[in-house]
Length: 382
Ligand SMILES: O=C(O)[C@H](O)[C@@H](O)[C@@H](O)C(=O)NO
Ligand SMILES: [Mg+2]
Image (cartoon, rainbow, N blue to C red; front, side, top):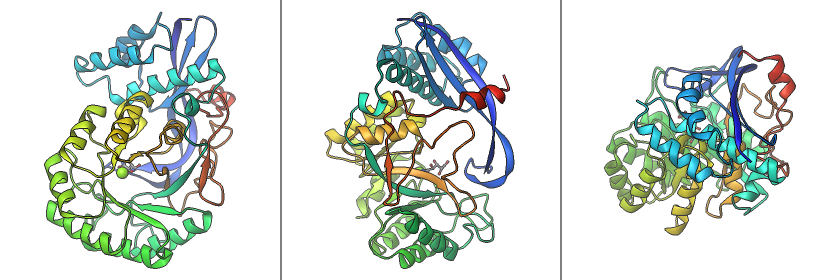
């Protein structure tokens, strides 16, 4: 079995999700969004598919790096293929990103699962076949009836509890919102949600990502009084020393790093330094399922939990495969959007959640995404 082709299909689908200047998503007008699907095909006809941003797996990335490494190679040699691509990152002038490695790695895992007739979550671990989800809100906004006030967060939190969530993570207000960042508003939103949902719902805060140590300490102490479960990405994660300091000041678990580059290597340094109490990695952010598993197993070896960053089939597969991650991050959620609406390019949700807050893993071979190839063919851009 050898890899014969690596193709990317760019296509459109309707979406009501917009992105602000800081890259945070919010509800927006109905538009045609663009997405890319990578398809790896072997000489004996097996295929693996994975989705990613068009820019991340654009033609230059495929021609200059991905095809040169993959074509002619055995698709199950994931560790070797990932290692070679990682080495090529250094000389790529920043063009070969961790997110590109992540799409390749996911497509290789999907190919293996489809070829072997086994779901990826069982191939990589097989710890549980359903995962409790937390509702991860979108960042705060200035939309009336949206997430513009502490009371609106509280109202939305009650709706999420009614939907079945047993845990809720608040992403609060960040620039370019006019009044953000605001220590006072963050604390008010957390207090309003705790008051509304009561003591039995787990709550987490993932607010503004660049507070000072003292502002972060003020918020952390308030969260301790509100019995929050963890405090996430409150300072610039490139300052590991700040996290070491804050983790030493607070009892509430500090979770991270999320957006820090450096894959499993940087996260090993955080464990060694005691910069966080709960480790974090997401498939897109650290370069694939393969390195995400390394982070989770690293954490396990130190008696730490590793909470997987983000939603989607690959992150869900990791959540079902590791013994030291509590939740699946289901989101991002907003009062104006129906998260349970199936995207046009799929035939079913990748992460269906029951009324008790559990997301059930697909038994389908591969990553488990039920791809609507007819939609992709009919809406192909190139
Ligand atoms: O910063 C973002 O783009 C979003 O908050 C995103 O990363 C969100 O999924 C998150 O922070 N989860 O923890
Ligand atoms: Mg986060």
